[in-house]
Length: 136
Image 1 (cartoon, rainbow, N blue to C red):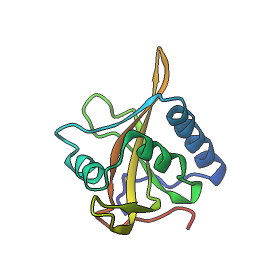
Image 2: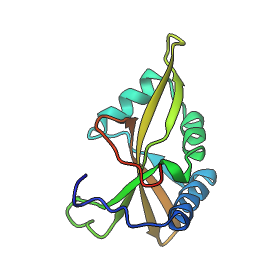
Image 3: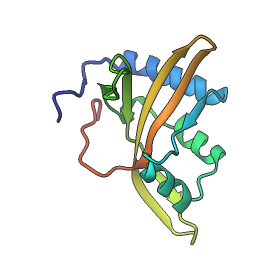
């Protein structure tokens, strides 16, 4: 595991982080990144026809035990931001109605803005490398 990954958390701390994420999602104060740098997110969303509502339901089902680690944002000027990685196992259906179980790599940025807390889902794609869970 990378030296930049932080797993120094209790279940209670991650429960509080996850609660903040899911409160934002529940109230519509979130977005899933789908820009040119997020081709994997776009591909997964298209392949499994993941509407905004399906994306919301997946995020709302993430549990504390799905937590892997946090890390600092590496984007220049945003190094103070902490990103949280969860990797739940989900069942998705392709456009051909083929069922697939996969580990969904999700990375969240919780932003404290003048207008309130907002969450950006930076990563939302199939896990593409080994991952270590903190609580499993």
